[in-house]
Amino acid sequence: MDALEWIVPCPKKAALGTSHLDLSKCRIQGGLGTDRAVTVLRPLLPTEEPDGATDTPVEVRIDGDTGLPPEGYTLTAGDGGVLIVGADAAGAFYGAQTLAALLAAPCAEHPACVPETDIRDWPDLPLRGTIEGFYGTPWTHADRLEHLRFSARHKLNTYVYAPKDDPFHRERWREPYPEEELARLAELVTEARAQHVRFVFALSPGLSMTYSDPAERAALRAKAEQVWQAGVREYALLFDDIRPELSQLRDRETYGTEEGASASAHAAVCRDFAEEFLAPRGAQRPLTMVPTDYAGTARTAYRDRLAAELPADVLVWWTGSDVVVGAIPAYDMTAAAASYGHRVALWDNFPVNDFDFSRVFLGPLVGRATDLDGVPLEGITANPMVEAAASRIALTTVADYAWHLAAYDPARSHRRAIRLLPGATELLPLVRACSAWPPGDDQSPALTALCAAALEGGPYEVLRAELTRLAELPTDVPGPIARELARWVAAAKDMGTAGLAALDLLAGAGTLAAAEEALARAESHEANVLRKVIPPFARQAFERVTA
Image (cartoon, rainbow, N blue to C red; front, side):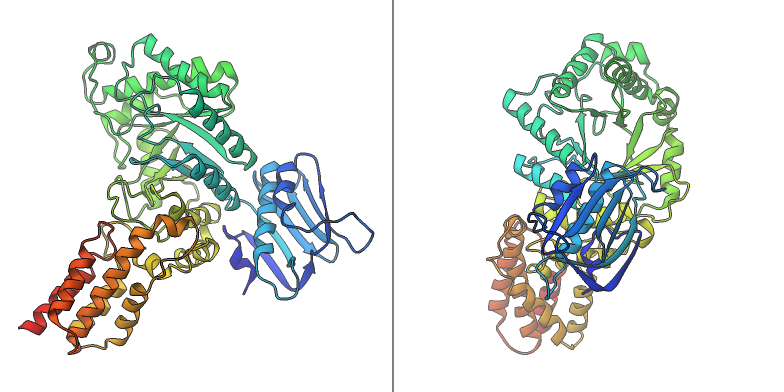
């Protein structure tokens, strides 16, 4: 198998030779600022005390004169050893991650080797990451730590902490974090820094804040100060999913009651936070905000005010033409940026499932524009599912998209993601059954077509094989993905069995009572797997045999 198949995201320029470099004994040399890159490699490469020519050199260094953009790197491997040169520390780190991916490719000859390699690589989008911004049970601390490591492996450089059901993020935003939770946040900040991931702390005060009250603004800054002391250096203010009009008398008197007046309030809070909190502390990155009017592309009274009053360097998050979307073309991105009068970042509500916890979305990112030349898009932050490990299938494809837009192929990226994530290959029939996007689309066009053909008289063999794979899904797959998907595995097995029972009826075998019992069992699951595909097929089969 081509070793490039193990590298996600896909590199910009890569050439692999037929010969392999044996790294079963090597020495790692790291230049100034490459400590984190070297840390990636040390557990993967067998090193011994140098004893001359038998040791293969693996060198990592930083050179700002490579002509590469930020986070870019080169990786060469040949007779002289391995050399990684980063345009900056992040580039060196990502070069090490690419070498780690090449080392993971199986080789029958050497315990540790890489093919002859010449890679020159850099990202397309400066902002590439995730936002834990869903409603529902927040991720555990262990989930978040592992997510940061996952992000590093796939060159995602941002994680936004914004779980809706963390009370101290939203409902009780004024209250300081308890010491135990603050310590966990500090550990996340430290881990993020080690993984070259920007940790963005978000506050969502809009449910109850009196925007014009100096004491309320001081409370917001005090909360931000608490997490600043824990190491946070980047912030976001979220005004999503709140009433569009101002509810406090003092705010209505200050900002007016005209349509869009709340934008003036939100802009004022952002300006105060930037001037009174970020600037005095020398924060290196500007504020990011989510407007109340966060979907769609048209100018509105709210957006007109925001464009006029929000500080020019504030980045605006936007979700697309709607809250959850199937396609986001380049002209929508451009129109949205124009409507806000600011550069935008895509808050991509994919593969989030907080609108329907019965479903999981295990397919690739689809429908996102790849020709973004001249488009004022800073980047993408994907909003994942409550199921942290299972989200990694889709998020791997998001990383692939954001790094190398022109090369992004959803199907190919999906295959690579499944191969790289432990447990996903064993559950492939379930992954395919839960890969549809957007949520309103047919859950499985291929199975729907096979079912329709079966109702018309066949052939039955391909449908029977697909349903059998579902019915025979293993229940003993180790790892976090399988644990999170256990409910959907059980539902899929029963749904496959119900489909087979209906197919038997069409073929003149089985009994109606047994098929109806199988369907009832399949529909008893809360987890939704092919609920709009198999039950309609089964009921039509029942009608055919009883007509």
